[in-house]
Image (cartoon, rainbow over the protein chains, first blue to last red):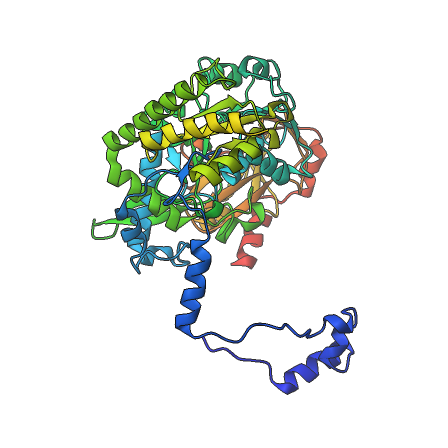
Length: 450
Length: 126
């Protein structure tokens, strides 16, 4: 495409059209001292010096390759096999977007088709879209789907307080101004049986997370039946790694599965870019946002891949869109597909088992410490809540300074009732030495902190 | 082009069968939309008014609103279309019907086109 800049004559015509004499006249609101201030930047560096500078900055970070990490709360330090990066960095794939003439990129479409197929197998759902931005936006899209599927007649959303606090916050952002009533998450004590009591004929959906934000596996028996009995939809937020061991939501009647795909081969990277997993049933596929890649045969009978469904937001149906999200995270979906293909069914189960065993070993050791109490009541998967004898922030600082350990999540930030409670995540990447160091670090923190 | 004489026609290319209150899309409209892949219909009991959309229809080429030719309430919707939307193409005036309306004001039929007028209306649009 040729880039055609404005000519002086173009500019003069445009300025005349809006009745000003110069470009400067457009910015009288900007005080003079803020116009072209002196920036006082350091002298320019050569490429080599820039490299040193950036290298030095990056080495100042406490990263998971040099520190033992027990921080989770929605983003997890799982091992990323080298196959993932190898595939991602191939020039044919290295873009975040589905090309605008999608069928010309058969490789990308095939990769997305395989991603979708694997997500369906993992979640037990009929269809998966080609992904959303992250777990939070996927969940919000799931709720919008539920509102649309009930044709706007139902305005109530029952939300578990054990759904990730940031997901709940994003959901509220998405639904603001929609006259939607979100209930259930105002009381931390609201367990699934309490939430079921809130279901009624005005309810569009029940949203639960399992394993929940506290790492606990919810008892989902009979939940879908109760939700469907009032004509509402069940939206489940799982941890995809946990699905290597646990019953897939599709098998217990979920209508929508919305999840964070980061654990599947995507590095922590300061919180993004991540991957929004979204899967639903055949009955609801037409209400699904995003896009769907399908497999077909061409005129010669050869296998090919096509953009089967993208009508909601783009092309022929823009003004009737039920969501304005049409972008997916193709590159990250490719990472997840590569991860799943690399570890395979047995590998995923092995990763899940390692998480389970290591986290249970850690919980047992920590619970035995004087002054520490691991919250019990429900089984957990790879994350658990510990009541500390000292403030979480101080303990984490101690662990970082004295043991090179990135400690757990301070639950008091989101749940005032859980002050001094730490959420600890243990994955397959944490070896026994690290876990034992954490236990020692916690013990010493309790003894030495004021 | 098939334009049955026992029906009334709206400018938005829906037909209504005054005897039964059935509403559908005309042969002209289905031909222009080409292969229909999805029909979104309202719930029974919902009210409809002329000019206000009661649903939408999606083909491989376009998505369009569906409008009721007359006022009334929805007595039935064609549930078969969720599995076989293509019957709107193959049999637009019989098995491809969309909704059945309990007409609230039979006087509104007078404002609709008959087969002759509708044929002329189609001819002028090409």
